[in-house]
Image (cartoon, rainbow, N blue to C red; front, side):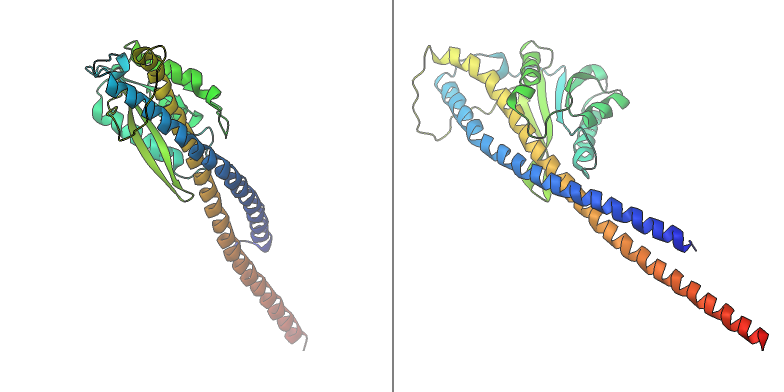
Length: 285
């Protein structure tokens, strides 16, 4: 049995750990609220640019653009959004497991695919397993601005336009609620869902619809990437908050068990001392 000093030391260290996890939970809760607001605030913009693009595409059925053309898939691009830090439960492992299973299922050679990684966890995962990484960005802020992701998003879209990849899929965690995040895989390119919606909005275009479509399509794809990043950030903070809450609860349970063990050991020590005193008194009589 561990000594009283050892048990007391474990209780003290667990209490200190609990203070850290509790603080991290509170910080993540604050960040999650802001990230959730950012993700929801971006939705109207994403919906509006989608509406405009669909309206133009519907009025120009013969419009041609590389992003609208479905071609033979010789090389696939995977855009993966993870965090730069751990301690977020299954947030990263769920996405990366999904990515790895998809690669194992669909590809025989590393020449058939490449990865665009956002976040150190995804970047390190790919490097350790020999998965090719074409582009990456690390150290994204907890509340990212579009300027932070614009260059990477633009270069990724250009890879498709230039024919470096023939298909682009995005992997990220979709924010459902504070306690629920869902791994989501979406085909980003080519854009094939531009059927006209039931919107009755009418637009006047200058200079002309085709030229505007050529400008809007890359912006539309970049907006989808940025929206997924905001969604992923909200999920990251929610997952970390939940993980830290669970760690705090586990610390409470462990402190309770250790305290019980400490009291039993202390009681046993006191009983032993009393027994020794009684034994000494009996020997003197």
